[in-house]
Image 1 (spheres, one colour):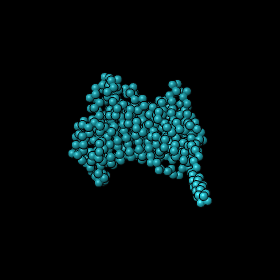
Image 2 (cartoon, helix red, strand yellow):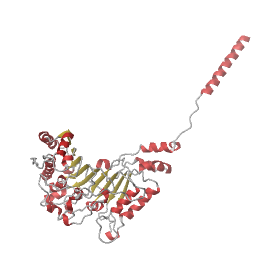
Image 3 (cartoon, one colour):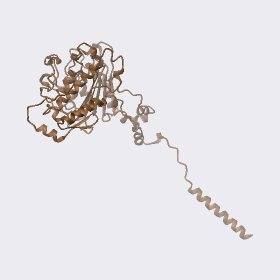
Image 4 (tube, one colour):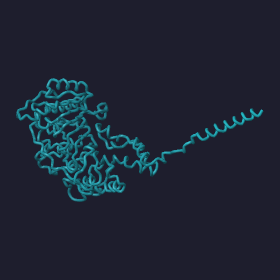
Length: 459
């Protein structure tokens, strides 16, 4: 009996030891954690993943409209409204892409507020919140066709120079997007825009996109000092196009039109890429002798077509040029084809990507074959310049040509066969893409021959 009691006691002792061991080894439940308790650095990183691509990224090649930068999908902006702390944590990411809108006041020009005055609250906000270095992209949406920066008297040729300076004294974006009516676009870029035939065209606004490398550092510029402008643009020498010269009357006595010596927007930074979307030309095809209509456009001044001494306003550092226009007339497209800037890459899209041709209201009183004939003639004019021997001035430097119209398989395959036949160092690199053999490019750049041959390209 004594042994049994001892065994029971030992057994009890064993049980107590195990219990104490289990109790000591039990992992205590963690305290509840919420996103509010995270450190600011981690919260900012989480919110950064809510950032999405701006809506303009995929719509720049479609028919222009003023709602380009609007989006119903704004998760980061929605998160920034949750609390003051979330707003502060997301601020640097939220203001990477900023937008400023100049609304149409619907009042007389004399009572309009100057654009510099309208911009001041935006710049003050950026400065007071220390967001100067955060802004990487700046979108300017100008709904006011008669936007001005002159309080009284006649308009100045470089009217918006101080406007652009005020922006770049505060922020240093690597991307500038302008959405504006042709008339306003001309004023903002110091380019002359011919408006006499504007009523024939159905395009409320154009897009102009300028970009430069993100690693560009401003040199010799102290904060608050005026931005250093580029040297005056290089002169693009005029030349006789192998497709024939553009009639001088297209420019309506261009030499007599007062022009600024340069464009402050193009001078303010060494831009490397430019995109110009001039929208639809289709409505003008309803008119008598549509091929003579002059579209409201900044293109002529950009490339120096018809300006005094053929001075181009385009930044001489731009090497990538994208042009989008929906069935532009041959006469208008030749402005670019015959005055091509010094480029490495050229992108051209002359056909809309949507079903605009199936819309009865858009095609009313329009012969579809006229659209395609002008499209074909425009590409033919461009190909003649590219494949001439030797290549026309500045075409000899071109490395890549890309067409945004390769969806037209019949036309593209015809172009492929043409390239294979003519060659001239060009090769097909993919749908809509032609690349030039570097060896051939170097050879043509070294040639001093003066003679050129005209290629026969069917329009």
